[in-house]
Amino acid sequence: MIDLKILRENPDAVRHSQKVRGEDIDVVDQLLAADSSSRAAITEFEALRAEQNTLSKSVAAAKGDEKSALLGSAKELAARVKSADSKRSQLESNARELLLKISNLIDLEAPIGGEEDFKVIEEIGKPRDFKSEGFEPKDHVELGKFLKAIDTERGAKVAGSRSYYLTGPGAMLEFALVNYAIASAVKAGFIPVIPPVLVNPQAMEGTGFLGQAAENVYHLEEDDIYLVGTSEVPLAAYHMDEIVDNLPIRYAGYSSCFRREAGTYGKDTRGIIRVHQFDKVEMFSFIKPEDAKAEHLRLLEWEKDFLKAMEVPFRVIDVASGDLGSSAIRKFDCEAWIPTQGAYREVTSTSNCTEFQARRLNIRYREDGATKPVATLNGTLVAVPRMIVAILENHQNIDGTINVPKALRPFLGVDTLAPIL
Image 1 (tube, rainbow, N blue to C red):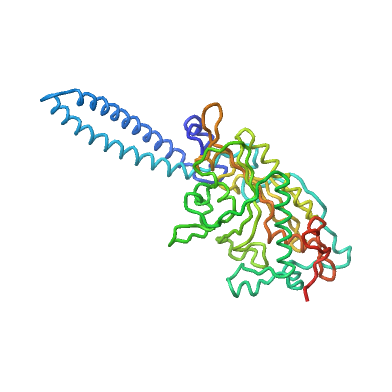
Image 2 (image 1 turned 90 degrees about the vertical axis):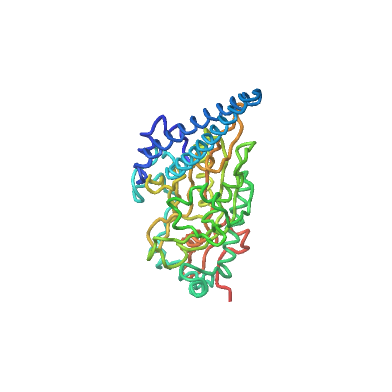
């Protein structure tokens, strides 16, 4: 959540952030009013409590009729204190509900606009000219079927649409990608983690996934528990209600991820680009707020290094304000070139969430004798299905075999992927 001090001192900044995100602006004034009422109720309650404490001392010292009279006053005052406490609690709860509806304050350097208003920062690598090589590239579905690496037909039979099996070379390619990603992360100083993929409402709400992103979250109602859409959620909540030391702390989480893909009917239905379940290695940093901007660029560089090692052309974009998640003030996406689509498609992203998630999750660090919220940042190192798509399509040969990127050869033990007979 945002810092209420900023809301009180500069509500126009909050209104601007909500506006450029395409979100509710009226909630800002509603929260200002609720915050004012809540603070007034707290003042009233504390004044009555102080009066009650003073009266309690007088009762203890009094005798006879005076004590009887004071006890009557104390009983009346206790009822007023209880009523004031109930009012305070209700108004604080109302203010918090409104506070949770306000997204993080956007970085003023982020592009303004919707999904298509991103800014291209750089393009790395050059797409192959398949025509000059004498053949038309096959898409990942055809290649996966030829290699006996991807089976979407049986995936749909067993689990419904947007489901798949990775078999043979496909399964081995996932293991290679994950092992290379974890090895790279450990080398960069990340602590490897295999987190739970079932989390409680506090963890999901704390990371900002029960607001605008709620429609894509799987909720198991009987147990009131959620399947994570990214290991960002359990990694962020790992230090919930804690005071952490020795910042920065960096984790690399490997997990399965689950997304309903609500609102994407008819979009990317072919293949494994947009699916309900996939595996991912996610980087997550806890860091001092003043170091968050630099950490964001470091996460981006680690993502770029991974994609360069995969030898696929890609570009980096600065995501526009209306396409940010509620927790992020700025997000960079890396998009790999997909030859058969003639387009770049997102394969990794990294977000700076400043102290927004830490305030919700109550994660602090000590500095100058006080505790303060940490900053949190996340970055995808590899989302397996989309990376497999990029590798298959960019490294294919005319006979349907796939040249393995040099970085993955030690993990696969082969230079070329071919059908397992």
